[in-house]
Image 1 (tube, rainbow, N blue to C red):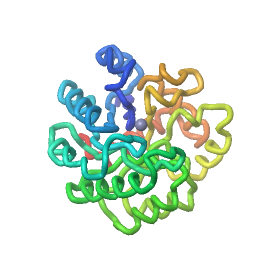
Image 2 (cartoon, rainbow, N blue to C red):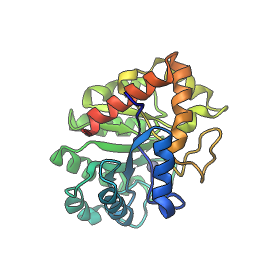
Image 3 (cartoon, helix red, strand yellow):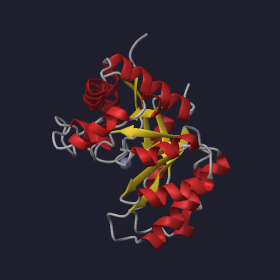
Length: 257
Ligand SMILES: [Zn+2]
């Protein structure tokens, strides 16, 4: 069987990737990246990823949502999501979450916005893509209060196993990004040693999170091979095994054929 990797988090609509999607996909394909999940971060980008997914069916899937760092959208301006999430190619809601590293919007905006979008995901049985920084306990509390549901991906996971293990029964997977290739990310690599392979998916967060050799701003889905290689070394598995396992996990969660 030919190798297949899924990039579960790539902002393919955003510059510079969005300016030449055909080329980005061509290079991705040559690196075994056959499916890309593109999350929205606000109303405009959510519309963009839905439109891009319709142009590349089976290759690009979309997630729609409002990112915690977005300052312009209030909780009550989420109505656009309801119709957008029913479009073809939309397989998830995201990226959504809580980011306590930014001061604005404050938690009084971020948290209700997160909860409203989670409820929408439960209502439509769509998995969620979660961005969480320095708010792991709050996120855990919210997810536990909602109980088992469609689950989702904890994108570029940097939290503890203690928190992750309580979210797995709720249907959650964790995303491994290019951060694990950074020399200074020793702790993240050490943590990965004990995290379960049957809950792992790969991602680039392109163009935002670089790998060691592909720097921020230039990172593209093709660079996921570097992350896959690093994970294989950490887990003592082959590159093929990591590619296959993470693809199987992503397909199962996102219900991709
Ligand atoms: Zn992202």
